[in-house]
Image (cartoon, rainbow, N blue to C red; front, side, top):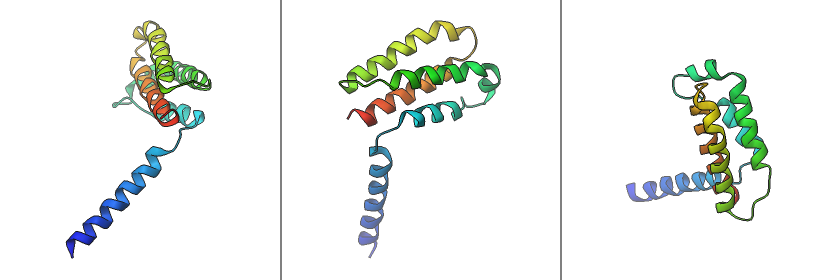
Length: 113
């Protein structure tokens, strides 16, 4: 009796995961998640303010381009992170850059399998 129930639960779990993680991410979703992702304590949001909006917008603009492959997309994410790093090391917004970079990688993986 337990085995069929376990199989049913496993199928449902993997089916839902495939639907959620298998669909492409829209550029506006990347920006929205970027803006509303906090860095643990939430303190960074108080410090960054408009800088976080700018960081997320930079990643959104970059991901609006079309890429030939996932590798090219990921390379663009890394390039943008590296260009933002020096500017935001002094203003305390590196966590926002890191969060945006992580979302950028997810965007590439979901849109360029």
